[in-house]
Image 1: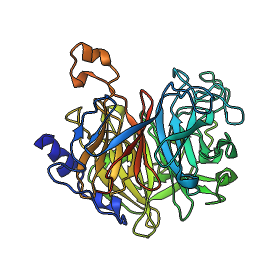
Image 2: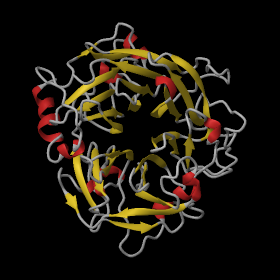
Image 3: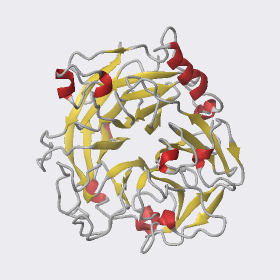
Image 4: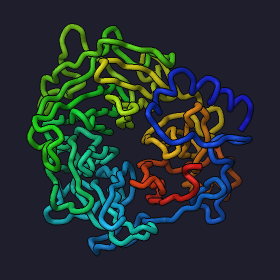
Length: 463
């Protein structure tokens, strides 16, 4: 990594209030010497996944392989994912498949687990033993559309999100789309295929639940104007376990006084007090998309590409919700351009803080732009899936603000460019998605979007 690149990433990009991300994390930060994090990436002789020395991976599942259940083939477009504790030390993975109607693969339709037979998206569930051997793989929900990200619930189910607003009759769909669905990875038939309509119909991306209040926070991924909103859902039956979100509730959108577009804020540490929450006039968007509805004379706060979302503790205190804006581009209509932001909202203070700003990607072979799925790492800090141009990484940010590459997708999609002597800049790589850790923090699970591949990565995570 060049000195210029290091200055961009460590000196400028991850400055300011970064330490707030990790408040209350009890484990020690990774040691750093010549290289930040766990050391340089070692090229994988099998051409799948480059990792630091001391780490190894196992391929759990690949697009086109038979599902262990016999229900069909593993679909592609692997996206958001959650890991949940099972019985006898087992782990249940619930994996999204972001399939549109044009996708070459689809989640097999299964009676009792299919919402709209015309839709190709959904989730599959893997059951792993203590050695990360796959003991089961099956359809968890089918007939949903463009299942992008989501989030875990405190009662160990997965909320999968449709990143579309297509109605019945559009693209061949037989039902309206744009909803959140609950999925139980251990027993999918317990949750079925029921849309949580009160949580709104819009281009859902990710969700995070406040474990104290049960309030659900939701991001909307809109990369063209009008840009998306940041929402909260106030359930009628908070923290009521599986199916409690079906009991309805109120949907509200965030208004930051004086800030109509979050991209206008560029300085880490910038804080905004007195955040307001405005009732959504029509959560089902029966006539008008939610982000275009009338929120009163003060308007509402928008942001381009709102994606990852998670809940973070605060040393036993009230905690906060963090959410990601992958990028903003003035040419698209944003107030300003940036290469990725992480925001922190503290409900008990009604305070919003910009805690991380990512820098320009000056070298496509190195990380630094377009953060997408995000999670906390066992040794403190973050793991972030990159979704930008060029080579794609899972990269970490230590508690000290140092950025390091944790994994690199070695599967170039345009192999023809290599055969023709193409440079790395001429290649395309599949993005990473769904980074998450096992309940005991011994394994990082992550997806390669294309070709759809799910990896289990083990090594000295607490070093």
